[in-house]
Image (cartoon, rainbow, N blue to C red):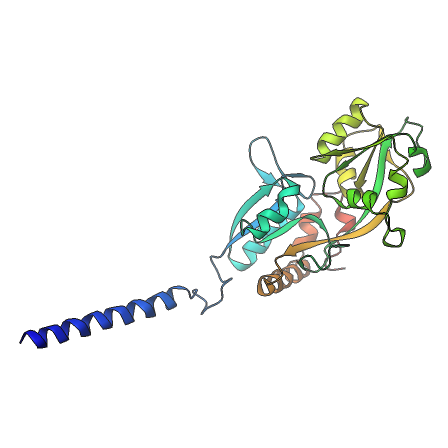
Length: 277
């Protein structure tokens, strides 16, 4: 009798273990039959916390910007939950590689970084410019010799001014003629220093510059460009499925007019948005 009870106990435990193992497998499935990115997925949007008009976090902790609105629209399209992951721009790679966010979506330049990330389709054209006060007397790139020029760290403008390869658009030869290249954590801080006279000019992308100058009358861009670029969304290289889903959503949102509607909220950049064009 004891042997029978022992065998029954072993059999019961074996069934329980088998069932538990089977349950853990099915628990990983989503409601749509195994799609990791099905309805209810929590999409973690990584972005620069101070890069208007693409992304920002205000004094009340609220997030906004074109890229933030677009990411939320993608989440609504798929039935995902949106989670904002704002960070200092120079921490973007650490945040992405640690899994804190699903992507870097924040006026992120593809050019020169083609092999560093898995990229979405480009969604915005952009150009690097020099911003100055209208009464500064600075009329050309040559006039920047001996001047203090500001730039945000880890941006395309910064990279251009550090790159001595002219065939790749490098502008290190120009930067070597500056009195100094002042590197800032954000363009907002740099613009405040330009207004205060602490620097003479800012190397900046045209869309961010347009935003900063939108309520200011005394500032302008030089006619000459530093360089040109496109913005796209950067993913970890093995996140192919997520990248494809985002691309599909971007196409759908362009077709149904959502992109145009969101872009209308940001007149400084709406003419540069390329989705659906």
